[in-house]
Length: 301
Image 1 (cartoon, rainbow, N blue to C red):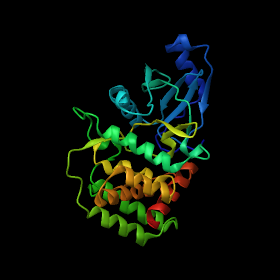
Image 2: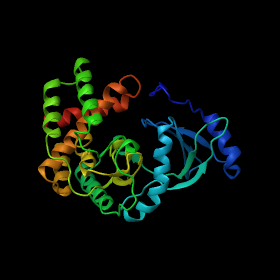
Image 3: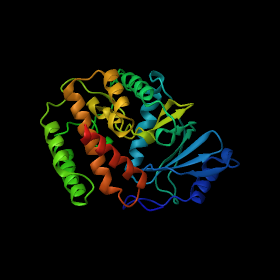
Image 4: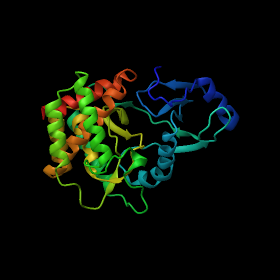
């Protein structure tokens, strides 16, 4: 597999097998297989039928998983869909320098691999989950910033604004997008008033690959590296990164946001996609396709 990050670690199955056998001998007899995934920060392995092993590929992912282990047990009882449940933490060793984690296996296929989905119903189900998350108590919660890729900060945050503008130019120079409509949307959104109410819990990365389905219905939300408290507009991403015009309309009708928040959500979808597109252009074809489709939906609207 092509490496996606300059500082990414190679994590062969044999390494994980040895770590499990050494640190969790009760699981020595369980089969271990790599799970093929377009995920960027962690390698996933299935252990037996009921467990999953999550191994950070890059050091930044270790803090994201530690945050999940701290907050998901607090939030999960208040959410209507399944979330990853940590079972055990593996320790750093001479063979692998970071903590690693074992979770309960969540059965299902992600939305991008699930056929014949009712995307309008999925949009409504997802809005119900987002609304439940936003209602959760934010006392002592981590704020949007460096610890969650800046998701949920104001769009005009200097780092977000500069990187988005640079990537719009880069994508346009590569012939991947049309420059003028992209920059005009971004400029309009960054001049829209920022979120001024109290921040709410956000997932920060609600993509098709982070949503699991069973029996053609949404069943679980995974990958909470973007979890924080901030502007809820970032969790409008699914309106543009999956589905149809009809499901986007259903999402908007169900989510009950004003025009300014909707515009910020649209700009978030653009920003995430134009940053991902050139970065993963030669290493993650699934993400490249998803980014192109998202940008097309954003700019058509």
